[in-house]
Image 1 (cartoon, rainbow over the protein chains, first blue to last red):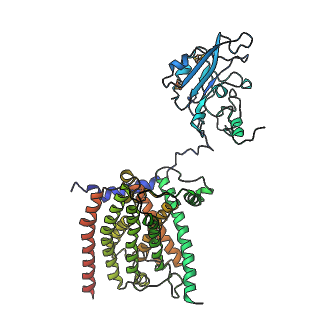
Image 2: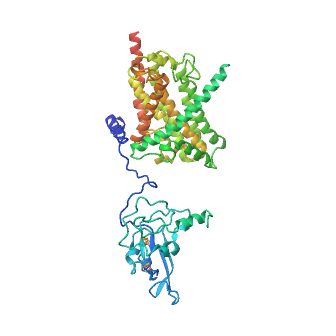
Image 3: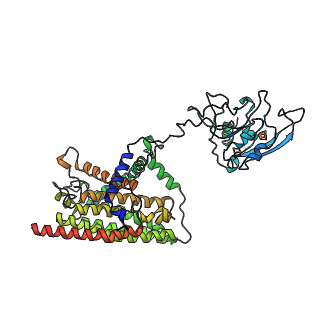
Length: 200
Length: 325
Ligand code: SF4
Ligand code: SF4
């Protein structure tokens, strides 16, 4: 009767029942995500950020090395000559357009490794959910550290993951302060008010 | 006060109680299954997830009510109501407590068990018509399975009732419970009880016998095409059937409202509820534990094992009763 063996194996069924009953009282490994946040690895690969120098100039020189290193073809860089009157970067060229499609990105960090000026880095921010696919193409307006944001996170001195008191995703915060940590995007709050028509 | 008003009031209260019990049975199932799978289960809506049923109901009501173009327009819409109606009508004869004045039951029928069997067999129409009227292939397969499964397991279930009826000497549910005072029937009729538990799971199409909606093979079986409130009605019917089956197990095998060991501190109705809840828990426990069995094995098990054993049980019971006079 190999056919219906499992059906008549009452011992196995009872053992199974005792196992599931025991599991009922075990500690659950669930992390209650939005209210409790896990401390993730210090070098977690999340959303990108384009850094600045101390004097506010952009680090990116529009060399397109990140774009060619990217295995997912997620980066589009269009470089341009710096105008002598209004120099965006210390080099000859700067990135006139810089776009990363975060839906294509596999968060491998090759762009960060390829960059000669440490301009593009991956931050531990990961809460990027949005309503439209188009919103996942991050251009310079959301990638570049805003002027008040300091220089951005140096690739080797990022704080160890996200602190527990990150607060609301949509709040604007400085990225360089390890005490307050990272937020989802700089422009989260601005975008939220804009969508709800609450501008001003 | 004319009798019908009394019946009407009792029906309304019972309907409310059963629907509430359904809602929280569903929540309990999700919680218990969650714990057994090392998850906390629903815990976001209200304290401890207690408002989850309300959220689910609101969601189902607001969903679009879709019907496939190939569906039979009338039967497709009617099927969920057939399921629900048969599921609820069973409660017309179930007594929940000792009732000299008929307080704890709507109707005290002297052939209560037969009425139960008759109505429960009608439940298959909702499922098979729903699957057939959907006009698509997976629901059809599901409904064919459900028909075959319900017919073959109903035989054994009926035979397991027969043993109890022989011992009790009555078909009235009230009488059966009274006959159990002192010795609940699951002890003398242990074989019948085991057969009843197995067939009960198969009758309500629950895991590990949920071949009718086997999602790994049939998408969602007979209710694949249903959405919104109509799906919700099937869902309610399934859980109400589970409650019914648990009530019957309590009445026929677990002594109904009879307090165990003479602990009469709790009223009879409370004992009834405790026993039904325990049986429901067993259902959920089974679902969290056992994998779905294969269809041919289900059929083979029903016809080659359960039916002979159930028949033998009836014969042995009858002989023992005849010999003892
Ligand atoms: S992390 Fe990898 S995939 Fe993403 S943009 Fe950089 S190189 Fe491309
Ligand atoms: S981010 Fe770095 S690698 Fe990419 S274009 Fe700018 S400077 Fe070159």
